[in-house]
Length: 604
Image (cartoon, rainbow, N blue to C red; front, side, top):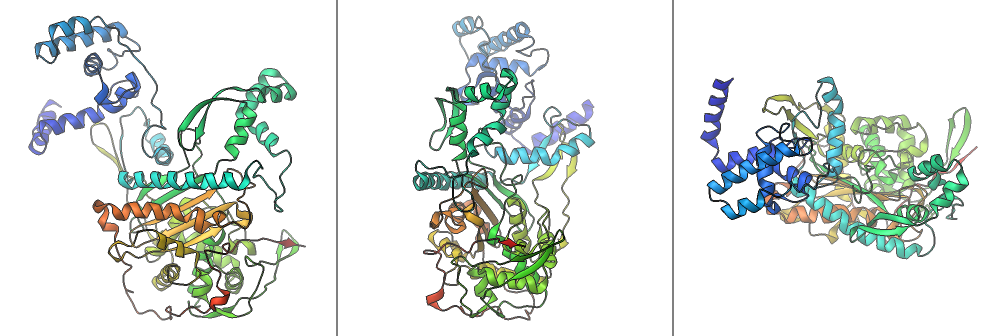
């Protein structure tokens, strides 16, 4: 073993300076109590950064390294203090501190401000939680503990892009929340399908809260517990600008306050290898642990139309083929009952004119998406959703064609990435390799890719997504507001808004990066006010992608993401460059009209 260590030491010193070696050591060494690295140790034991450590604190941490268990300051404080003073004496001998300083520092107590490591501290807490969940089974199968085995986990996250994503989310959600509060004023935003306030909504949510359950168990009856829920108590709440504020508020009022907060999720990944580069699961991990990237399942609205068109194009229909924007009635059987579905366009008007599929996609015309789904069969649409990356169960009902099913943001963004990757599917990648504490590779990521759809279908879908920035009236036109077209970088995308403005979506694509965002309330019955642009995917969710890409494009160290879509790799059999087929007078402008909505009506 010693011989191996000598050889290893020689090799390390051939490639690294003493400073580099010391830096790597301090960033990974075990300081006991499940604490690895000097940054974590300084925070856990003293609540400071390494730069803020005092000489006696430095001495204690360095002294622990000889034997973290023997000199553990929590279990063996006397030994720890003696060891600290040995290090202080060495510091005096090396003239780092004076003899007078040694005399005063050696009599001081350890002065611990111990606090267990908080996962909400630092960058990308939602991503870190997702990584932990992703490798949990692997750790169990290999009899390893994620937190105590000293594992080195190499992830795909890009810290630059993660910072830009967090900044973009904060900027947009701050603006959006102010507008949401202004819209509703003193009224409550929890509404039914007719926008009437839901009676008893706050009480029912209070009865589901953990605080109420504790009070219920403590008092023994509901009335007493509810009475205590109305009594003000000290608490810490999330605040838009300040992050965390201490206040005095009743638990019932705090529930009402939190229900009024808009929630969000954003994720960006590379389509070529599916490396996840940025991941923001909500507005603040310290207060809201639920992840709206991978855990939350919501109705995707018009973003689901990608799969309608994928099934249609794969069946031989072309982007320049025409379909009529007209009233449609779809009769079907569900659970043995005869039903009729009558979907609407956003303004309830059908123009009864032929429209190219390219224009219908960019203007998000419901009637034509439904017509295509009925032509190819709803089973085919669902099949292509699964092929491209959706992993939640979708019911075989016509309304799925307009996004009535539930999906996760991660699956939706990855599905769009499959299109950009010329039809190649691969699961999102969070971890590239795992090493033990000695650097031995225990697991390494191996690509597992499948051809989900043929190249021509993928290419034509890319053209439809890009057309959103070219077609007049498209909701994707809002991307032109952002300075993201560096060196001719090209984009495409699709917006989505679910019924009653509960969920706002946007998925943006570029050759090297695909990103998507969701915005909505904690509960589906929390809506934006009807008739306002702010409650559309193009105005609520798209800006997060726009702000994010603006920061990415500005960063010269990320120039590799400035690219145009490549020319077709093979001859494309269908025309895809048809001009806008909707008269200007009938265009659904993204600036003046709500985005096409998913309106579901089921009658016996």
